[in-house]
Image 1 (cartoon, one colour):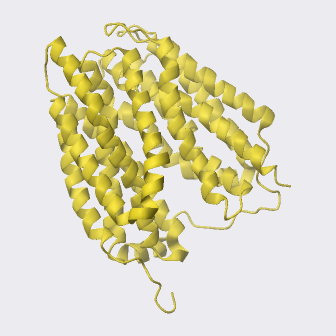
Image 2 (image 1 turned 90 degrees about the horizontal axis):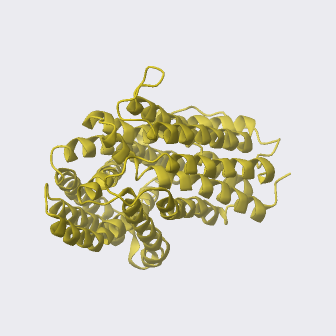
Image 3 (image 1 turned 135 degrees about the vertical axis):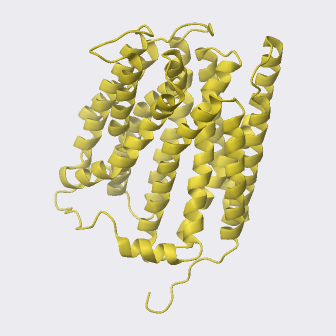
Length: 422
């Protein structure tokens, strides 16, 4: 018997949102803490990429397991893992920079905590499957939007909540409190799941026998003139944004911002992204169409990255830092609105250019391209910012120029129309 739909959707949203608050707390601190513990550029890049890498590997694993054992136990297992990994992150943050614990230094333990958090946090597809269990076809899109809303709200309110637990002194050492706060929030989500979250998978729902990779579907999809370029565009645009996202904390640190004020910057980003996706893009996309929305978004993102690069000078006086910080707040909306417009437009274009019977596999390829870009983007961005603060943003802008050219090419092609016999 299916659980009551409204109550189940509200509970799974609450569970995902509370857990994502922890993600929003840790992400802005990660490059700063790694820098404090003397991580070199490649180790710091690995630290930033580990979470996405583990999600890339384990999201399909958890999804398949949930088809066999149910959604509820997998979601609870992931939450329990998040509790342990965030607690480890908090503990390691309190260690002296030169400390050795059980034979490992703080950076190694911090990397382990991010690997574990990525494995534990790879249960988002399971949450999406839970929503699919509880919704009909006509309600599916609105239900899936709950996951996007949870991401936006977690990325906004997590940093805001964490401002009370870090110092306003730019020279203050890392604090253990944000890690423990994130662990506490995941514990609350786990308790909510234990006591309130019913199982959504029906006992008679046997998983369909499928291969891990349908090579025939992949070959047919890539043989179409626009699918390959669209997948490349999704990789390039996410790669560019990942360079920006992963290095922003180090840029604000060079401008003299404390951990507390850095959280305000990330809350500002989360608010802009939520506003752009929820109001601007949602209303304009049906009016102007995917083609023009994608082109507008790619151009805005390119310009925004160039502007950030112009502000990221290697050295400046305190007075110049303040003026550059004000300018940074003024130009950040350009990049954020561009990315918010571009992502759903590319996903929609990919769907429209695909055969209806292969959309699931093709959209899955698109998600894989984005996940791969989120692994490689931070590695490239961190390596570049250690050479010059401007380089990751200029590199991302050049990447976006290529992406914009691909968008212009792909968006002008007509939607796929199945041939006779397809």
